[in-house]
Image (cartoon, rainbow, N blue to C red):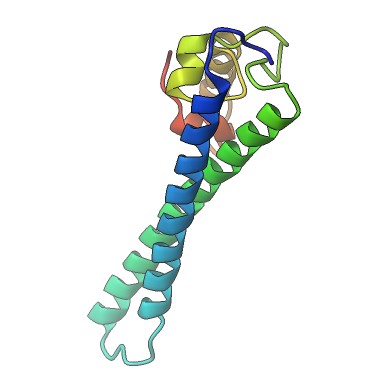
Length: 137
């Protein structure tokens, strides 16, 4: 493993719990989306509210799917024993960062470099996926 200072079993349990929460949340959002799909909308005000609701649900679903992919990626790294190793530079990711964000695949230095690069690039480019849900640890 990339880190000897962390309790991999506890991290694995934490990731599995988070994955289950995300799957349940996504199922609820899917149910809400299906409830919004109705032909009974009559006036333009109702259609506007419905459109905004669908857009909000789509955005929340997209964000949660990104986190789910990151969680599943971390579980995969635990399985292949690359967990705790920065996918960019190969250095160890700090135990504190892994405790706070067990799905992260980048050390703080590389994460900050990605964020700096993103700030300098065009605002039309998609954000680096792991930055949407990271804290600085």
